[in-house]
Image 1 (tube, rainbow, N blue to C red):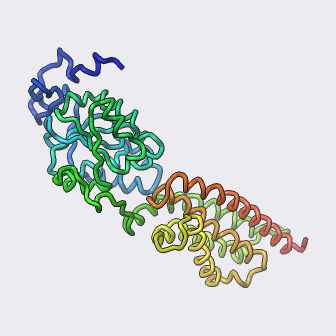
Image 2 (tube, rainbow, N blue to C red):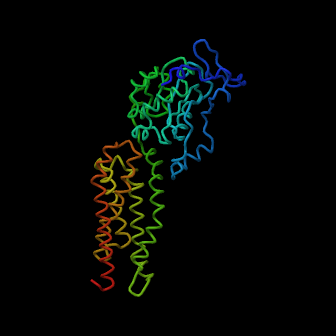
Image 3 (cartoon, rainbow, N blue to C red):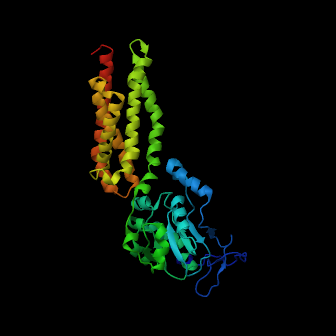
Length: 375
């Protein structure tokens, strides 16, 4: 690295006088006086209050792909009126994570160091290496953090632990890594306790509300595919030797739309809600169990048991496993499993899903051929 650049101040020698405003320490340090936060300082001040737009965008993040583009520029930000002794909190550049952090710094003066995690939240980014040692070290040097604060400590979210080696960060930058609480809401209590976290602060909570707010992220993708499924099912059951039969679509197609809806409800909503109470650690098995339950109930309600054997068998082969597949997608949103556990589940579950889908197609073909008098 360029030693001269690392030791240089973040303010160029010919920088114009700062405007009047909130005091900053962009050029503060031993022997330096703080300047004002302005365009010349290069440090943006953010509020700890969330706007209506922030809250609306948080909802959008829960409903679709908007979250993949909801990012904040990496760099250093000021909350309140921080000085050279104010704490530095590290955040991912996923704006939802950034917003949660700044909201938790209400009535506090602090710096937020945003690192580039490619728009991914802290926990997922740490698992993928984006919230990592190299990125953190590079961002500390790039922002000239040593010229902004007099102390040498940075506070990281505990869920970033898998990606950051604190001893390497300190060795390369001189900044000691302090591991903050799991939940940003506990930050003030953590700081007031002398940067010591209680057992409760170290515990990952994933209660009913936490699970509920994540269910739209599983429901929406499934519902987007549902119209294509509905079209295919109605068309297949409407096919007759003489052409298209509305009677066939109504008698067989509509019940299978209800069964698919029950499977989506089971895998995307019921399984997450009942997650801690469903037997087995495997998400695939949890989803299959809830799917089997909803299949039994829905099949009895809409008369599946009076249909030909091929369709009854297909119902109990396909729909519980559809619920299982959807529930397996929820692993990425929970604290109940890790990358190795997900890979293990995929190794045995995916071949089963593919086999079941193939068998279901064969059973439907057998039913149609029997219906047409071929078999």
